Length: 397
Picture 1 (cartoon, rainbow, N blue to C red):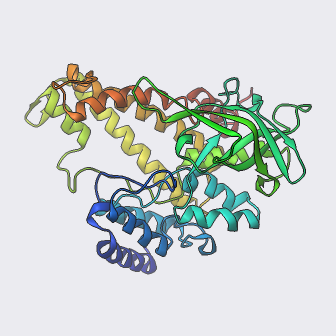
Picture 2 (picture 1 turned 120 degrees about the horizontal axis):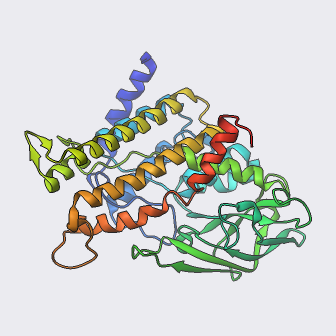
Picture 3 (picture 1 turned 90 degrees about the horizontal axis):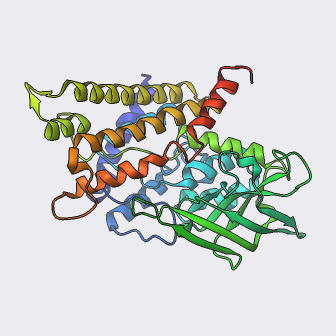
């Protein structure tokens, strides 16, 4: 490690120790920027304010747009030091992770100056208008129409599986602006406010009991021409770039909470020991022991690979089609991990409600049900395998 990076680590460690409030460490709320979701803990609000001042809500963005201009190596140090003290991210959502980085790279200067500082300051929440009832994995079949009306577009149609739409202030949306050309052409990428008469949101209740997704209906909704990202009818290029950011991970600070300051064992291993039993410190059932070890090794390999990719990509930009590898492996590990955690609990991992189950056991059931979807949303595993085959490995059709 260079002397300058060592100095950056020391300065970062000292600053975090002095400025991260107790209420922003460990489990708890992470703001999304939405004006519709109040920040409950004053420590969380103070943490956000301090990180905004440092430019560390979006640390790799240029300073003129609210970031700190950190290099990828400095970002890795910042995340490591936040993990060391169990600090939560100050801000996290589709603004910092998806549309923000896309605008940094592909937005006009006017769009950058109007939208990026508000995202960096946590003043706006975003949602994604991609999937439709007839256009999911085959996203380019979308039919939501945008008609040119002078200085704006008039939008009619429907989106589905719109994550967090009920809390979003703005949407980035794919619309069809030319129906008479091949389906991958004639698509445009627009930004529009959610709080307007032409937008209606209906949450979808899932089997897990939550409603993280919504149906979104457009009835003469308005998107201004100044919020057309990229060229008219060339939105498919912008859309694919944004998906690469989604699959490679958000650009904001993503220090994950551990739940314990210094765990003596990995939480998954400890869960197995608690519910399955142990003998001489080992999981007593050999088959489950192998499953736990395999899951832990794969999760560790995934983390190290993602870190190596970040360090190799000093430009800070998304890694292109190779990000589909991270999406495929990451979503599979997430689904398998939730299923394993539920099975390790036995019948305690199947509870839905009642006094016979702890909160953690009930959450385990919901996580197992919720994570059945991770290999579908954000691009199905089948779509990712196709991209890997064609764009990464160069295999023939």
